[in-house]
Image (cartoon, rainbow, N blue to C red; front, side, top):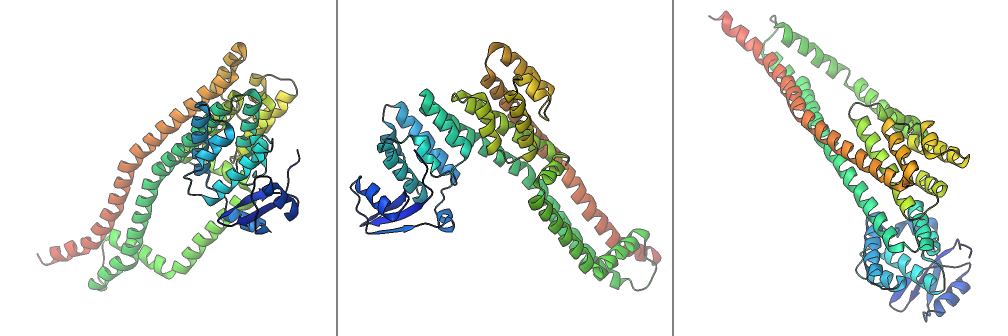
Length: 392
């Protein structure tokens, strides 16, 4: 059954929705098979389609609800219909209703979802397809929802670990600029042209430099941001490799991306997906390009007849722990369990590194912030102390 590239928005009385067809006439005929006689129908452009694209969090919530209903014995179309009853997303409701009509015409769930491959992760559609072939649809939907929830939790932890240091650094920078550019020069006017202590004189020179070259400094910062933005968009692989070398942050990014890679592989294999297809779909779902290239090498080696251990050994994913897990898994034939264990290990390491970063950042930033502000205050009051000693 071929995929139809045209998506139509139809309206009938108090109903509306989406349908895929080669023409408006065919769309009306397909709808009439479900006793829907639409009064208005129009083809959606790509721009308008993006307005109705549902949030992935709602998609995964739908998968979990559908899995629960399938486990209770409901057929797929009924489970989907009950799952979208309270969804706040108009686009998600229209998409699922269109899929239900396709399923009732004899199409598989995964094939119906392929009509919306620009809305959904391709890896999810492939996992659902293999699960349908192996009769494990409910388990696959649950696994996909758990995978998404786990990744969301890790992203929140990463944001939490980086948010506090960045906020403190921003506040410290703002306070320093204000004191160097406004407060310290105001104090200097009180002291006249007399000789100032070394610390005060040095900071005043720095303040004068900032005020005289403020436009140049701001321009340099803007150029640096523009350059970073350009590299990020034009050379994303180089950008991501550079991020991996950042202290603390680089290791956190490596851990979270490895966890996603191994967990996605584990879910694909657990749904019965063939190994090479699991690698291909996982590769397509990755956004971390260094791992994407490494996984491509693994897939090519596996297609050439090499085992899992040999394939990973020649790639950038050749950590000793990874090879050890895969060696044992190849011997007992449980590769999916090895990837699950590796995902759990990287998640634990990520969480430990997050806690360590927060624990180190709080006292270190307090010391830095206190030292900067203390130095500025001492520089402002040193001339007063000197003047007091002259009157004794």
